[in-house]
Image (cartoon, rainbow, N blue to C red; front, side, top):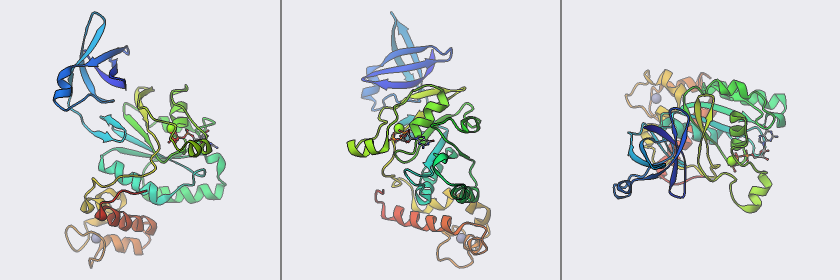
Length: 289
Ligand SMILES: Nc1nc2c(ncn2[C@@H]2O[C@H](COP(=O)(O)OP(=O)(O)OP(=O)(O)O)[C@@H](O)[C@H]2O)c(=O)[nH]1
Ligand SMILES: [Mg+2]
Ligand SMILES: [Zn+2]
């Protein structure tokens, strides 16, 4: 039988079979020796003997996220809130770069629209339409416009990521329709110095699977090569072919078509500035916040 690991707790794995049934399994000892261990999202072969399930084999992974450890993710909902905490475009760009480097489809979700004035929402949508990814403005707490976002679920494995306190768990709960994840007041979190979300589980939403993640307080882009960052700015690709030099990094090179597009107002200057800053950060190979 084959299925997908939806949860792992204390050495036990919960495998969802194709018929929807969930089986509790242990992993075979050989995995420990091979230095490969089953992770949430893995497609696995299992056997069941005397009602005891065993994971026999892990099928090849199409992708692997490290934080949290989830295999075979295909899409990211990048969540920010309008306020509490305030949206931060530079940080949003960093999340986009990270998700692009993992080749995930991206949908930007701006949560807590109830906290923002219409003029503030306009500023946000202006920015988002310049980046060119699909986006949704939502109110997760009141189930506001969640159906719009559900259209992107399909048969993806979607990771819900973003900074702490923006409402990722609240959103996950509105998507699945029950309280699958703990949510928490942001001031409480700060007091405890902890994130509300710690464990990792795939949750079924309309034919797809969704995984909530702990909020990131820092974002590690150190695995990314500085020369690759330019490919992760999607709107640059329309111009990059016209740069004078092949492999142009759109920095100080003469005849750069990307810089010209910035000057002509076709690419947002703030995106271009994010690009330069991210290249600089990645070059230093440091960890950020
Ligand atoms: N005003 C408003 N508050 C919201 C909305 N969605 C979530 N919240 C609140 O934001 C706070 C944080 O929500 P969580 O869902 O726990 O945030 P999180 O992103 O999962 O946080 P971590 O797990 O720590 O990363 C809670 O107090 C929620 O009630 C919303 O649409 N509007
Ligand atoms: Mg959470
Ligand atoms: Zn260039």
